[in-house]
Every structure is written in C-alpha cells, then in structure tokens.
Length: 150
Length: 150
DNA sequence: CTGGATGCAAACATTTTGCAACGCC
DNA sequence: GGCGTTGCAAAATGTTTGCATCCAG
Image (cartoon, rainbow over all chains, first blue to last red):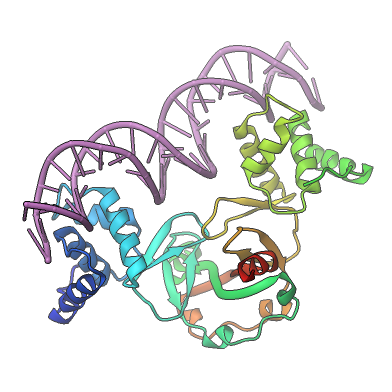
C-alpha cells in the first residue's frame, strides 16, 4: 500500500462532497480519504488506522470507524460486509463481486455482468423481493496456489 | 421453533457419529443436536443457548459454541458465515444459497442449481482457483413487504 | 464563536481460551 | 479411573457510544 500522490481532482472532489453534505473537511477526514483512494486492496478500519498512525500518531480508531461510516453514507466508499466477519472498505463503486483467498484472505474484485443480469429462479418470488446479489467466490489465489504446490 | 420429537433414527445417527469420531455423547451434545435438528430456521449459538436454558439451566454458551464447532467439523451441521451477521448454523447440507431479509434478518434457503453449474468468467483463472461460491440474495421477505406496504 | 468532530475511555457484542471440576466410556 | 468435556471466568476481537475538549467554518 504505497502512497501515490492524490491529484488535485480528488482533493477538489472530497472538498466539494463535504461542502454539499454540510460536514467539515477535517484533517482526519482528508487523510482517511487519501488513504482510501490510494489503497490498492480492500483495507479494514484497522489497516487504515495502523497506516495512518505513522503520519498522525494521535488519530483514534473510532474516528476511523466514524469517518468510514460517514463515507459509506455519502457514497464515497462502500462498506463490504464479507462472510468472514471483518468489515472491509472499498472505493470501487462499480457493480462487482469478490474473490476471497481462503489462505491469505486477500480480496480481489470480480466483474461478472452476465451473472448480474441472469434471471433469478421462479421460486424466490414466494420468499421475497430481491434487491441485491452478494456473491463471494472462495478458493486459493495464484500466489497461494504456487506456494502450496511447491 | 417448536420442539418436534426426534425419531429414533436421528438418535441412532448422533450416537453412531460420536462413536465413529471417538468422542463422547454427552447430555449437552445430545440436546444441542436435538435443538439443531428440530430448528426450522437458522439459529445462532445464542438462539440455541437461550432455548436450551429452559431445559438445562446451567448449560454454558461456550459449550454451545464448542459443540457447534465440533458438529461443523463432523459434518453434522454447517457454520454459515453470512455477511453482516453473526454466525448462524444450518443442518441443511445440500448445496444451496440464502435469501436474507434486510428488515427482519430472516434467512431462507434458496436452491439455484443452474447458477451452481454456470461457468465462471474467464478472467477469474488469472486471480485464482475457485473452490466454492457463496451467494446471498438480499431484499425484503414477503412478511416485511406486506408490513411496509400498509 | 459555536456546533460538529475528535480523542479518550469504556461499553458492547460475539466468539474463543485457560483451567479446575466433572462425568462418560 | 482416566481423559475428554463442561462450566466458569476472563480474554480476545471488532465495533460503537458518551462525553468533555477542540477546531473548521
């Protein structure tokens, strides 16, 4: 998770979003935003907090949680409730699913538009009205496959 | 969750399973087994514990957790790691998915064999090897739909 | 200045673990 | 009777909340 520089566009974006939402653009919110936007993976609140402490030693974990919840509400990031308890956060707002490595827990985005548009089985209408599909593909990532193969 | 009587077949089953696995068939394990087999829904460890306390006031929650973990290993029940939620337990061992009501949290089994046999998108082979598919359909169940419609 | 945001601590919910006592085989 | 299992307590984990202080607008 190296910290590539954010461009001015991104900074303008968070500034505008906070203004429109009527909330303050605090130092913490800005830094957490940067952290999210430059993260290549799907960081947990703990990941972000740990990483942030190097630059802001006094930042509290609950501020990270509160900020991520705010970002989720504002539509900047999305809280991923994955099936193995830990909540991760994702800035990829395009419709997608996830591959999860059962060995190293790495999470990768998966696009499968054909599945998204497949009709659900008839019987489901008797159970309720489906509003979203949450798909997780579990297995071993290429790195872990190689390691286990040796 | 009314307690229909278990038939002798089920009792023989748990007795045999414990014997084969070389573990003791304790009073607690038997009662937790009964509880699981007669549950219509997908109970949490807390649910089972609460229900069990009526008959066994001293049963401890950690015994329930330990027993459910054992049953999961023995293949009697399956621990469901659902997104969002605490761990629930399921005695339906047939391949299936779940519908989760976002309002009342009720979990219903969903069978969708066509999806299970659909080929995954090509690109996934570059990410890793998929061993299982975890699908959750989220929405509102019929009961909650009616309630919100009134 | 002032109300919303933060840091701290403590509560919270869920699940796990160490250990002495217990009871199934 | 021995060892696996239980109950109790306490820890571990992950997340949320109450409150006094602080700082962005």
